[in-house]
Amino acid sequence: MQLANCCLLYKAPQIRLPHPHLVLYAGNRNGICPRPMVRYSGFRLLAEALRGHRGWGPAWRKASPKSSYEVVIVGGGGHGLATAYYLAKNHGITDVAVLERGGIGLGNVGRNTTIIRSNYFSRENIRFYDFSLKLWEGLEQDLNYNAMVSQRGALNLVHADGQRDQLARRANQMLLEGVDAELLDKQGVKKLVPLIDTDNGRFPVIGGFLQKRGGTVRHDAVAWGYARAADARGVDIVETCEVTGLRREGEAITGVETSRGFIGAKKVLFAVAGHSSRLAEMAGFRLPIETHVLQAFVSEGVKPLIDCVVTYGAGHFYVSQSDKGGLVFGGALDGYNTYARRGNLPMVEDVLAAGLTLMPALGRLRVLRQWGGTMDMSLDGNPIISTTPVANLFLNGGWCYGGFKAIPAGGFTTAHLVATGQPHPLIAHFGLERFREGRMIDERGVGPYAWMH
Ligand SMILES: Cc1cc2nc3c(=O)[nH]c(=O)nc-3n(C[C@H](O)[C@H](O)[C@H](O)COP(=O)(O)OP(=O)(O)OC[C@H]3O[C@@H](n4cnc5c(N)ncnc54)[C@H](O)[C@@H]3O)c2cc1C
Image (tube, rainbow, N blue to C red):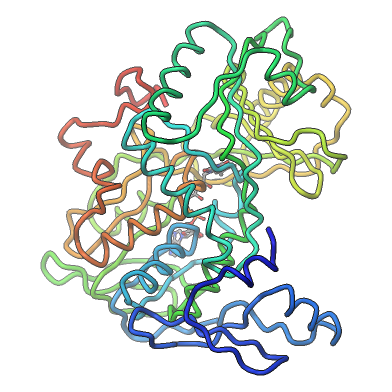
């Protein structure tokens, strides 16, 4: 991303103070400027370089919790922080606290394989995820933060005629919705990623399905960027503050019990991803969500090798190359319920075997790191952004493997729901009631079976 560009394009209300402290006042919709935010720009970088980088302050305050707020958001991951930001930016609601039990960026938002795309099948999902992609496209200017948004293309490999037919249907649906999609033949795949062994004996590659606007974003920068921008608009970001219980009066929520005492709230949002079921249990209801571990890996850094995201469905392996040169890759869930963020060796073997089948040259690379994240697997593989059985308690969860790409749209639409009490049209199909009413989302076009995602 281009620091200089964001300097030129940023449109928020601002006051420029004399050098060296260029200060941005990111005003809310009433033009009120809650908190000064140091503006990042190429010029600022240059100025700091000349004075030993002594002028950079913390990106956000370490807020202490107040006794009560209009909105309390539980979970300082991507969705919680983005919701706080859009509540302030779009709805002028700044009396908001984000309560995070650990540190910002340490949950799934900082543990994923950073892939963004909108190559979905169902019309509603294409619209939702493409809205997210559009927000990603302007995010760095909006937040004044370098999130390294890289639209390098997302390629799904095709191994069988039936799979090609299914992906062609998907591509047609996307084109009908005005979203870019391309089918490639075998030569097209080989040209794009020469490293792929298209003639491998196990799952030969016969073509590809490419979305050029897909790509990657630096994951933890997304958390930091939203945290900084929300803080600048007056949101309190309270770290090391675990929610341990809820207080209700009758059917309505009145606040949350935390490791730092009781905090009153008119409205509460759960945005805790893998811990959604535990929080719902505190509130007295059950969710159609299971928690599983998903692992990811990064190799030693090498020269540019793969310049798009490659997804290999037959063996379940996906890979991209980070700007530092490491290959970032992952595969399927470990397949058992757990809150542990480690994962086990059989899945490590499975992922590496799939990678080597596809790109035998990777066999000479060393894996540097491996980690896991707690996935909130919903029954139909689609997210839940919804009201709940408890009045004034809202839920953002059930993201499964795919919630990173959805962070901008998830935050935008969740903020709408919390502010107005009504679902944004883009998330009308994500309501919790769909499980009670048997209206599960059939994203794959293979039947609404829980085990098919
Ligand atoms: C290995 C891996 C690879 C992935 N790859 C991709 C990908 O390539 N593309 C994609 O789109 N998605 C991907 N995902 C999924 C994506 O990362 C998640 O769906 C998304 O980040 C979840 O939303 P979040 O960021 O809000 O969650 P999180 O960052 O997990 O935020 C939830 C927060 O809630 C906090 N919390 C929990 N309980 C409490 C409590 N009681 N009190 C206070 N705070 C609490 C947690 O500490 C955590 O910080 C991947 C996930 C993993 C693990």
